[in-house]
Amino acid sequence: MIEGTEGLFARTEEFPNSLAQARLVALVGLDDLIDRLVTDAVALLDPTVIQQWSRAMHGEIIPAINALADRTPLLVFAGDVGVGKTEVAEVIGQAIAIRTDTDVTLYPLSLTARGRGAVGEMTTLLTRAFERITADFARARRSDGTASSLGVLLVDEADALAQSRELAQMHHEDRAGVNALLRGIDGMRIDRLPVLTILCTNRIDALDPAVQRRAATVEVFERPTHAQRAALLTRLLSGTKLSPADIDALASATGENAGRTYSYTYSDLRQRLVPEIILAAYRQGVAVDSVIARDVLARTLPTRPFEAERR
Ligand SMILES: Nc1ncnc2c1ncn2[C@@H]1O[C@H](COP(=O)(O)OP(=O)(O)O)[C@@H](O)[C@H]1O
Ligand SMILES: [Mg+2]
Image (cartoon, rainbow, N blue to C red; front, top):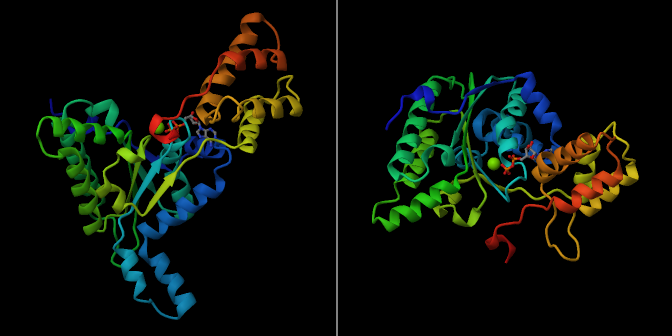
């Protein structure tokens, strides 16, 4: 069944807003990454920024600037489940809004939740999403090239596209989902819409090469390092009886070890380990201490990477 555009996006969100700011601040160890992504995004969305730089550095707008203007404002976020792709994609609009002092609207589209299975359904979903965004931003570009408002289209769980491609081949149909995506992002580039598209995938190898080629940046998110795990655990477990040394031991225990080539992900720590520790202490009616933490850790294992990525 084809739906109207009201139900198209999970929920659009306007930046800046205080909730998004809190989520942005809660991210641990990603300051440099987010800073770099915002710089890239702003350069892709607003050509006047690069032009100003060129004038300042070279005394004129050098020809190479034009090549840059033709780049697709597409970022691909890749990496294991639980490493922060969706979270960063959902809050980067906040950082862009602050940096540019311009209102940003997020349009989140999850392909897994909506279009799984039926190839035609996903194609329709993508086509309608691009139509809606084109309508919303058709007049957002001012005559001097700057934008009165910016958009972020988040295509999350884009692995579903690869699945649709495999399915389509099975049914000797055409690569309809991927083509709808390519048509959409190419159309936005040609129309110079001030909209950044972010595509998240857990399996970069399964993403269509034509999509990858268009990406201005392919950012591979990694599992947290020891320092990042320690920083996150310190934040999440502040006020408990865990000492800095206990936290450091937990950070070590959640890293790679002799029997395991991968560490805990951000979500393993934030959505599984820490809540389990709290619940365990609560059930026993005691304070959170290192004994409980170690006990829960022993039965809370990290998410395994995908086979393809471990080879
Ligand atoms: N750098 C980080 N600091 C703190 N929490 C994080 C970080 N990255 C991810 N998380 C948390 O981990 C969980 C999973 O992140 P998510 O973005 O959904 O992962 P992915 O989309 O890569 O599977 C979320 O609760 C998110 O807030
Ligand atoms: Mg995700």
